[in-house]
Image 1: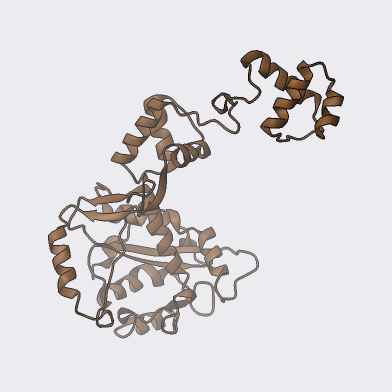
Image 2 (image 1 turned 135 degrees about the vertical axis):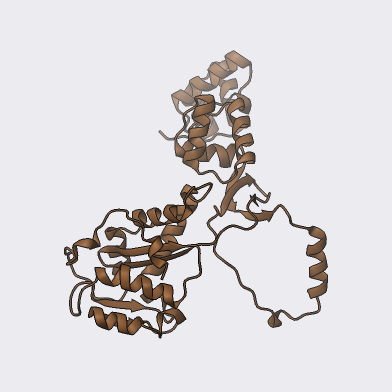
Length: 345
């Protein structure tokens, strides 16, 4: 029999009639209720123990999974998140175990954060330590008379963790410690079979550097058209056109094709960039890295795999083979060898 809820008046009347000598069957007929024997026994036991028929809610047995987080553990978690609000759940679990020897599952830890500590995951607000509220509001006042349609804005991608934790209803902040971080350019070449070539530099890539990358890194790993890895598809960036780009491809026997303007969905490498950025944010590989170029390059090799490229190509209109074939160029699968210096013309 499933759980049924009875009104307090029904419970009081039933216990009173049982104490007066009525049978459970006669009580059910008199009250017009179908009360089980277990309910009668439970109500009578409660009355004999507490002289009450209605149980105190504070004495109810807890239902559902327990929180398994002591008050000391909760204080430690609050302090940890205040100090490092961008930690992932697995990192929080490791820190908790290392400091308190309390081992929780990811699901239990998340339930404690949300339901008990009222700490949720949200988009982090980047706060620069040199931010001036006086200058901010002076700028707002100055721009108040300028129509919004007159304005243009630009932004840049960074490799910071973009989410952090804080109390419900409160903003999560992160702080920029490096005011002038070094910028890097990632230049990869991919195929259906994975990464063909990649280079990373802290300089702006112009046409001479791009041509150097084509001549010494990418084109040697391609084949003459028609054949596997024999058609080079690029967008219409200025460095991709003119110069010796077409001559280099023609000399290598590679067919050169340019994408229609503003069609990034036809270029699976765009999604590869997002995967690499996500991995760098997740691992924070660039924080205090002795060789940032190699950190980016090695991460690129590990992320842009043959399996990833094939899944990305499957979401494009290109005609993909039903079964993966081995690449015709043995060098298409090569160890982690740095090509960053090849950008120097």
